[in-house]
Length: 165
Image: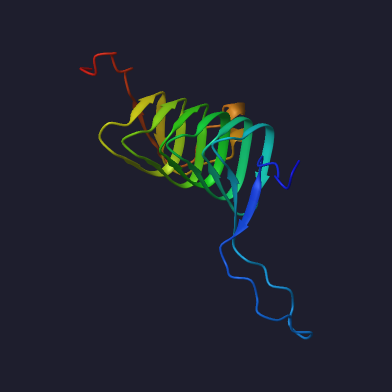
């Protein structure tokens, strides 16, 4: 109303718009990122071929071929499967990254992590198991299939409220 547009999900191009269309050139496919901003909530399944940035709230499932970034104000209650996952906010749910998971000092993760590589800044909070090694699909993991290559599993005890443990 009154020229205001809803701000639930916006797809923003990271490439500038072409100056003039060319008749012989195929349509450009710009690198895109989908944003869920601070004022937005999404419930359901997000399937993306590019990247996702969450500064609002998401509940359900995220399946992303690119990078999922949970901003400092992001609150996610979902299973995440992506190439790369970067967390500055809070997530309740399991994360499967074919590439790497990065947890900043403000990250709060309540769930299991499966990845080929991980970076954790001092101050990040993790309550769950971390499995490092070749990532199989979530369907195979649910069936209880053992990985054919060795993995390293690290069990982290919950931190106390005082931060001393």
